[in-house]
Length: 152
Image (cartoon, rainbow, N blue to C red):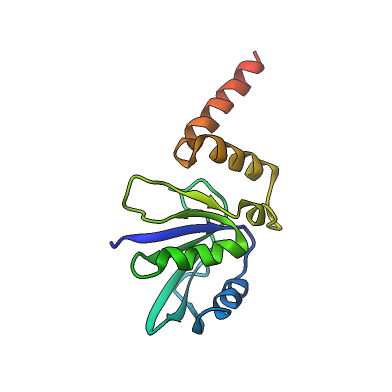
């Protein structure tokens, strides 16, 4: 397993939308199907280097932010490529998934404009903004406990 730059963009973003954005800056953009209906690879040329952006349209258990997940091998311009995508769709980036730093937001206003964005998503974004992504689960658990105390 290699080191990756990961991002989560707004829910409901389509493969075509991601491909169109990449086509504005990069050449030879192609969507490649895989063994799963929820996992695709979008390839493109970054200068003379062929890159493969992994796109997951489902939520994974290790990340609590809803959205379309992107993963790109961490080398070359991986962070800049992800930030380019995030500037359009908004969301969160983890520049290096093997360090102790977690996700941080980029253009959160665009992320919140997703057509599948819920009030709970907005609440989670507020928690992340105030307490950081690494504290999201603990904060949600405490809020659930507080809610139960209110029912006694």
